[in-house]
Image 1 (cartoon, helix red, strand yellow):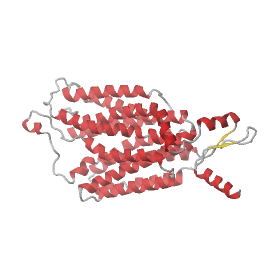
Image 2 (cartoon, rainbow, N blue to C red):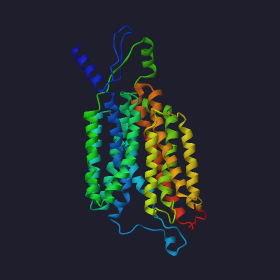
Image 3 (cartoon, rainbow, N blue to C red):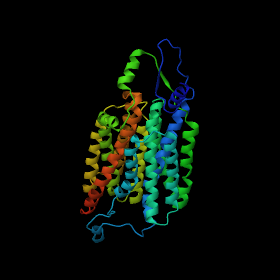
Image 4 (tube, one colour):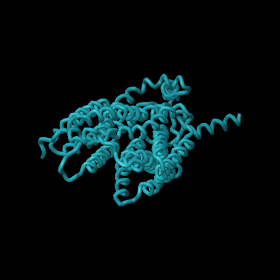
Length: 424
C-alpha cells in the first residue's frame, strides 16, 4: 500500500494534472507573487529557442559564400534582357532550416514527455549548431550545423508550448513575444556584428551565450508547475469525459481532427507569408534611392520582423479568434507582391515597407492568437498534446512555401526586366 502511494506521489510530482478535492475542503489559491518568474522565463525561452533559427537564415548567404566564389546569376541578366537575381531563391536555404524542425515536431507528440531530457537535448544541439557553423571548413559541415540548429528549435518549441499547459495561460503571450523578439534581435545582432567586421566564426562563438541563457531560464528561473484543485462533483464528471488525458497512439490520432480548426488557418497564413519572404522579397527592387539592392532586402526583413514582434506581444491587448480572416488578408498580400515583382508598379518603397509591416503583423497575430485561444478552449488535460500538434502547422506552411517559392522565383527571373514608370 505504501509503495502504491509513493508511486502516485511520484507520478503527481512529474506530471501534475488536476487534484480533485471535496467541495468543503479548505484550500486557497496560491498568491502568485512569483508569476513574474514564469512570464519572464517564457519570454527568454521564446527568444533563445528561435534565435538560432533566425540567425541561420540571416547568415545563410555568408555561410554559403564561404565556399563559393560568386553567387549564380540568371543567364538573361548577362545580355541585358533579363533580371539580375539568384537562380536559386532563398527558399532553398529556408528548406534546410525548416525541414529538420518539422520532422522533429511531427515525432515529438508521440514520445514520452520527459521535459528535462528534451530541453537538455535542445540546448546541446543549439550550441553544437553554432559551433559547427562557426568552425566549418566544408559546405556540408556548415549545412549540418544549420540542420542541427533547426532540430533544436523544433524540440524546444513543441516542448515549451506543451509544458505551458501547466502554467498561467499568459505564458503563451510572453513566449510568443519572445519568439517575435528573436526575429528582431537575431537579425539585428548578426547584421551589427558583421558590420563591425567580426568574422562569421567569431560571430557564431559570441552567440553561444544564448543556449546558456536558455538553460538558465528553464532550470533556474522557471518555477515548477503548480497543481490546480477541482472542487465539485460536476467538475469531476467533466474531468472524466472531456478532460481525460489522451493515452496511446490510436486515441491521439483520432483527436487530431478536432484540432484542424486551429491548424489549417495557421498553416495557410505561414504558407502565404513565407512564399512572399523567400520567393519574392529579393525580387523587389527600387533604383536610385537611399538604399542599395542588398540593403533593401535586409531592411525589408527587419521591417517584417518588427511587425511579427509587435503582434506576438499584443494578445493581452487585442485578441482575434477568426484566424482564417488573417489567412485571407495574407493571400491578398501574395497577390500584391506577385504582381509587383512582375510589373514594378509601386511608386515608392515606403508603400512596400508598410505592406511588409502588415504582413508581419498578420503572421505574428495568427501565431499568438491561435495558441492563446487554445489555452482557453481546450481542456487542460489535453492541452499538452494539442499544443505539440498544432505547433507543426506553421512548419507545414513554411515547408510548402519553400518548395513552391523556388520554381516561381526562377520563372520570374526568366521574364524580361520590368521598368518602374512611376516613382515618387
